[in-house]
Image 1 (spheres, rainbow, N blue to C red):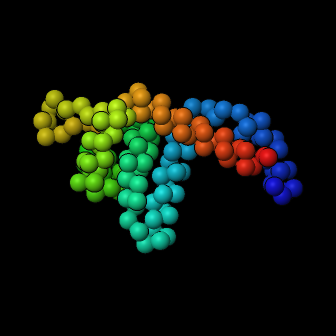
Image 2 (image 1 turned 45 degrees about the vertical axis):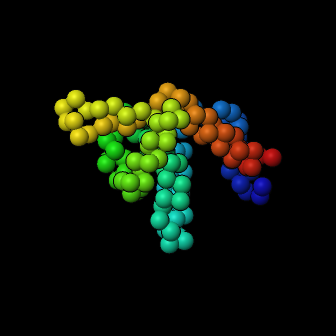
Length: 139
């Protein structure tokens, strides 16, 4: 690492090397989501190269903000076509990573959210990514 970067990061090195605070993980998920969409746009690709990952990141962010997302809102948020999203949601539901809950006021709508298992799995991925970044910066 260049000396100037080491000097800049020095005061926060211990914070970066430790486990990230849970409150920082939604921001990391948002960065990953924006990076995936930007990466796809940079190569003139649709952002659905990994639609399940985009859906999980969008659900993680919504969960952290206390928001509920319908399937159509999730599709708009994650920029994933409805048919693709629906197939992914069914698969993620089979894996017990997401849950769909029918809206009692509108039978046409279902709310989609992370299951406890999905939240834990994504949190684990984000913590591991944080550790990898710290390792790259400081080793």
